[in-house]
Image 1 (cartoon, rainbow, N blue to C red):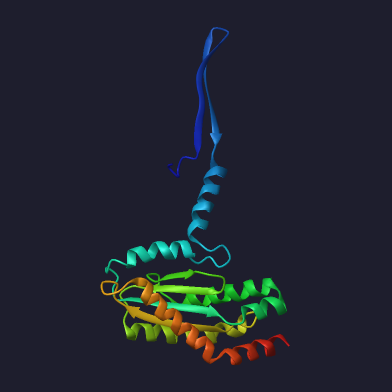
Image 2: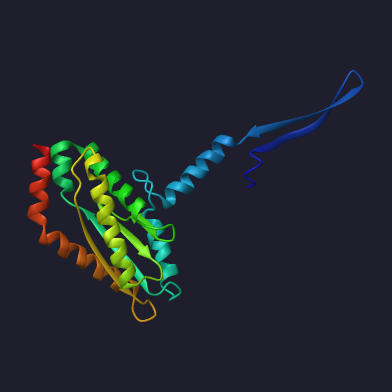
Length: 205
């Protein structure tokens, strides 16, 4: 449908009144339907809470990244630490704020060409086209810098774990590249698990 035209013609006819002919048309305003369709289209590829792309969009993009055109492909995986503790202690609204804070950090860190997605409850993934080890290190330092810049402005304690990997989809399945990033993230989470929980508990109390 043409976005400039949001009405549909239902009836068009001529009516004779006192020997004179009058034309009339009946239109239906489709603005609400159009807006609802646009919202559904937006939500099909975006996470409603954070405004980032969702898992559906991420999986669609993987197909584009799996033919070698974006090689080398970089993948970052982020996971918010202690989400269950935050939800149980401060409520789910606080948990939502933590996720929104994470999204804000990622939005400020990554470039327009990068695909930033919330792919699970507390997990985020970013696709980096034409990546290099140097670029991934620069982005890693940038996310840490922006986190330090913003962390005191958040209403809830926010800590997270990071993992990343690089690979060529001409040589291996994208799933393997992603799995390495995921393992890297869990290794980072495990190495500081107690530290993150202690900081969150201290912030709560």
